[in-house]
Image (cartoon, rainbow, N blue to C red; front, side, top):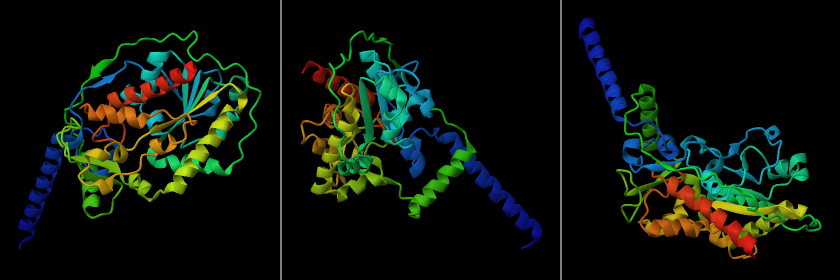
Length: 354
């Protein structure tokens, strides 16, 4: 083969590859979901098609610096991605909660700060919040809470009259508007190369962070692919938990509550974001892919302040609501965020009436 012919073949091949990349870039939707991005799945297959309700502004403050906590807030939240990383979507559960209750709120990242770093701050001690919420996704709940079971709970301070949670609160009553999903291609060749790389890694079993689980029921999601569900692999680690782990979890939650409520003023709430693999357990083709419901395990101790987020989300799914969780994401759609907010507000209102 002559050098000239060889060069032509290489040039044609290069142009073909370039055209393929550009063509795929023109077809692929912009990356939106964390599971699609990490696992190398296409938004064209797993991206939601139904509109998501959204606010025109966020009503809560997310802080990446403890120095920002320099004034009183009604509610302090220490949470993970379900609380911290939802600002851009404008339908975080905090917006729904504040829009309903009117309580002010500041949010800290539990992946960045230990609980004691928050409640030992001078502002927390001098002007304690009415409510301290520890929010955690279910798959990390045991490791984040059970370790408290080995601690000694502090002596409770002389109890003052509990604050009226909703006294003087003025809910802003902001409108909630439909936010249609973007169906326009992103035309980003770099995204295509990253996407192809993630696909290759998945098929070569070099990337097992996302697991695809077949569903026995269609119509749970508005995405074109509604026969499979994406989850993070570490959800399945909950399958190794047993009765001792559940007991340690309940004991740890009880100590955590006593630590926070030792000032005699602040109420503690343990708010759990259930995993897909436990919430959608009734709809999986293979029951062995389901995982334990840790909210139900916590609820076996009725003294623990744990809203039944598992029930309110499961009931919505059973009623036929789509996108309670997003198909391309580990988090909820706007419906799920609203239900989560309602679970917290209902819990607080119920405890106030007792």
